[in-house]
Amino acid sequence: MPAVVTADVESAHSEALRHFAFYEQIPSYRRVLDLERVARAAELALIGDEETVAAGIGRYFDAGATEVVLTATDLTGPADHRPSGRNGQTGLRCHQNVMSEAASPG
Image (tube, rainbow, N blue to C red; front, side, top):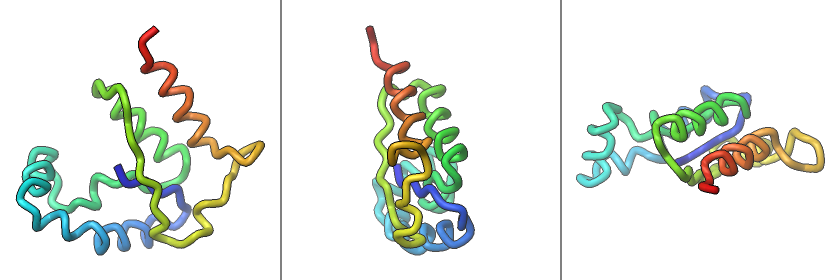
């Protein structure tokens, strides 16, 4: 799942539309997009601030996912790769760790 933590949602979404458009032409991916009821592949990307992206991850777990694999992208440039939390860890990473632990059997 493409994920971009950014304050510039509009630019990231525009870039996602451009970068992921080729998936829409591949029949196997087109079928997945149709099953998800989305017209554009970029609609599946998680784009926004840390809380927005974390909430998107949470929706996958709520729907029954046991593992969510994110593809970090730099659609809006390297500035979005700067950590915003303590000890160089973003709030998103912290949230992912908690969700992974909650989803782990045991």
